[in-house]
Image 1 (cartoon, rainbow, N blue to C red):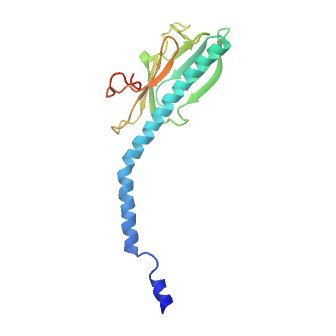
Image 2 (image 1 turned 45 degrees about the vertical axis):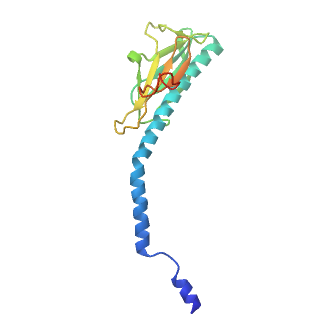
Length: 181
C-alpha cells in the first residue's frame, strides 16, 4: 500500500504544465523588444569598432611601411571597408571587412559622402587625398531598422593628427562626458 501512494504523488498535472508554459510565454513576449534592441545595438557597436579598427590598421601600416595608406569605406547597407597601401601609384590591398561579418542590420554614412582617409608615414591624415577628394573625417553607424527607441548610433571620428576615436552622437550626454562627440 505504501508503494502505490508514493507512485501516485509523482509528476505534474496537465493543468500545471499549461500554467508554467503560459508564464514562460508571457515572460518571453515581454523580453523580446529588449532583446531586439540589444541585438541591434550590438551590431551597431560591432560595425563602429570594425571601422575604428580598420582606420587604426591603415594608420599603423602607414607608419610601419612609411608609405601612404588609404582606408576606403563603402557606405550604405551593408557597408564594407578596405585598407590599401599606395605603392608606385598603385593600390596594394592590405585588409578588407564586410558588414556581413556581424553587422548586417547597420547603416553607415560618412561626412559629405567622403569615403577615403589617407595616412602618411607619420600617421597623420592627408588632406586632401592624393586624388584631390576631401578626406574622410567622420563615420556614422546606425541601425537600418527604424523600430525601437533604445537604439544608440555610434560615430567614428578621425582628427587631422590621425587619432581615431569612437563616440556617441546623442545629445542626451552631459557636456564633458568622454563618450560624447
